[in-house]
Length: 277
Ligand SMILES: [Zn+2]
Image 1 (spheres, protein in one colour):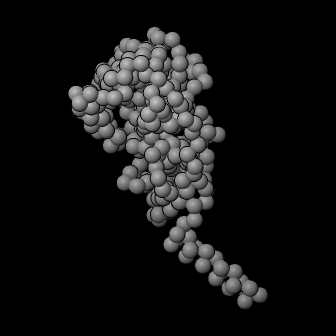
Image 2 (image 1 turned 180 degrees about the vertical axis):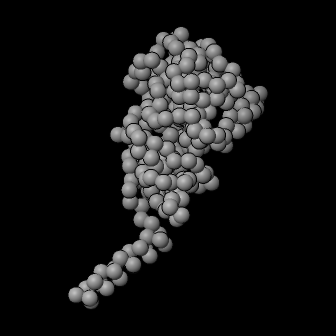
Image 3 (image 1 turned 30 degrees about the vertical axis):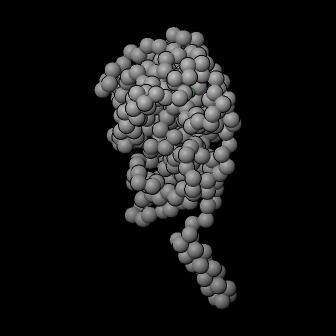
């Protein structure tokens, strides 16, 4: 009896030691997705060079782990809890998104002149500063809709062939609605940036704190100013077709902890975001 018990505890010790050396990827997640790692009493979550506060989905607390669209390897997440550190490994799944062929009539918005290229680089540098912002959280999941009636849409992650040439994948969800349709803040935020950008047209970037930024592109009108505080559901602009666009639509995107993820995942409940244990 004693012999059996000690054998059982030996097996347990070996299993734990193996887990500490190389945590097996218990689950895979595709690029551009999120994984919820639930638990109470978490002090902070850590992924790559980011440390952030836990997030609740449908009232369940945990670490919301980003799996960026351009990610190329497995994700190792850690968290501090009850005076110890826990580790989770997530394998990177297959790229699941379709290919989209687009025709842009204005070829100067596809093959950039040196002036336009310099402009895009300036704009990208300005926008890139937003990904490092880390204020306290102002949002609750799921987020509110960016349009009062959200049509089917998306095409997040689609590999794009524009005028016959492969281009960067689509990093947001597109919703085709008429010009002038009201665009709403998905949650409480500070307006981090607004402006007229070469690709995005009239754009609003909202900082919801704790590393969540939401983006609204190709707007016809913009009703908010940088630095302004907005609340969930606030009218921030109207749908348009400014910048590089094939017609009136809202391009809605998010960055979570700097990573590009499918924004539609944050518009639904926990059923949209897989949970690991
Ligand atoms: Zn788009």
